[in-house]
Length: 290
Image (cartoon, rainbow, N blue to C red; front, side, top):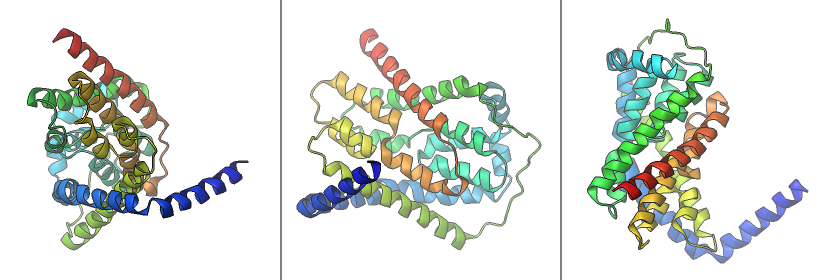
């Protein structure tokens, strides 16, 4: 039965691709434009910088103060602090790249990698302020700060997940190779582009057009459509909902970057549900108090 449904789905998808070719072409162009104007300029320098940091002992300096606090509060290695704060600046899927660097250097276990990933679904602040221009600046900053706080709360709630921390592991820097770094960065950005275009194209095939529905596929696309919602509180709530889930596009990008490690993502998905409830609660309290 499952095989039959799969075959029928493929046939229907092929028919839709033929019938709605102009729509899909427009969606692909839109995805490429988002990648060129928003994602590439933001991610490219950050990903190169992360390779540069991992090639020095700077990561040790960055985690020397905050790292032990993360270890005590969240039961993760001090290197988690590096992933968290770098992700708070650059957003996702950069967080997956930082985690992959730690895995590549055998500094964290696969279980800890998912634990850190679960508490680092963060977004580039400049990008968020840009694409949520329908919100006033104060609420834009509120959304960013609330998301950081919720991720920390999730980290604390998941502190009981045992992940085999080894505090004796020390980063041994490797020589920085600019050509290799550029090559890896371009590969990562092409994965991002592929996922972005795929899910924007799929959302364009849906019979209904709604920010939440489109945002499930690709968050940037969904957030852009929230601008047309009349009620301001609904705009604020929908923004929080989409940031909590992250979209299938971002989740696919994260998995693509970490594909070599065959991770178990159940904790990550549970954390997204928790993230959603916490964000809705915080925004609801804000709307009734202020």
